[in-house]
Length: 472
Image (cartoon, rainbow, N blue to C red; front, top):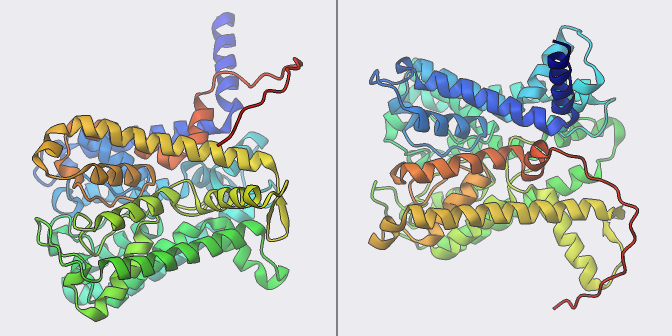
């Protein structure tokens, strides 16, 4: 008994030694519970079980706030199934550990050092001292934005769908948009998998959803910094970079899609048209929303299958970059991308230091950014290569091209949720390979790698001769 207790004690110590392990495990636990609930016949309108793979895919897509689906949310799931999905989205968006720590603080229970480390890792907090206030602000900010979005969307949906369906659709979409999830309940009203394609003529719906996506993708650290600006009269470097990169990417993306897709009049198999099929006054709105939704949101207002090849490539790039650190979005994060650009710029100019806005950035941060970039790139390209084999017959028939599979892979890793290859028509084997990529895209390549690490990095006193390698 003593040996058994010792083993359990050692395992517990090892488990809690790395915060990443607990964070990953918490998401796995939520995914397992969600899968079991969605497998129940009560979750499906037809009274039949959705099956393990499809339930797991939907659950991971919801908790990882991705938005890729194998069945239409509105037409397939009952009220019970929809409640399960929206709860998974909210948990996935805020982080299970953050939610747990918040409620422990709420009831004034003592949160130990270990719990604070976990919450700090989950929420992206910079220090222990600000953690309780940060977590409170996370929930207050989330509620404020989601409630505002709910009210604005209700003004459009209630007159069109009635009180019951209008309020439920507005509430579901507000939470989904702020959490950058991409799920909606419009399939039984405007057509399966239609998303927001029927609302290009409604600026309130498009702009409300778009700004909820942006606000959720900025990150809670930025929002707390902005809230305290009236007292501090200054912003952290992190917030300045996140805001600048977000505005720049949205603006540049809008200009590009407006120019590239203005005359695109393609129509997909479901009858959804490209941007060129819309009236001229709706196209700038569609270009703006396309640029915004690719930052890990998952809604779409135009056909993704009929995007031009160049537009799909830029879409992949935007999805790969993703949203802000400590936000509800995915991707490698805008701050990581900015750090890589700054590093390249410093090397080109022959500077020994990396300077951003008169701040010196440590080389360790650059090394981590490079590691994240290559891990993410390898994961995305690796999945696209696997999909080439699992979808070989469809590629041979010309149903879609490799660029569509790369698009799908970027959407899965960036937890975006848009698709040009149509996720429901992909094979079950493809779905199985997409699931872990969505999971890793949410948890983070580095965090996931650390959670699996069994040993600490060992310091060595060995001194090796310097090696010379030719570059270029």
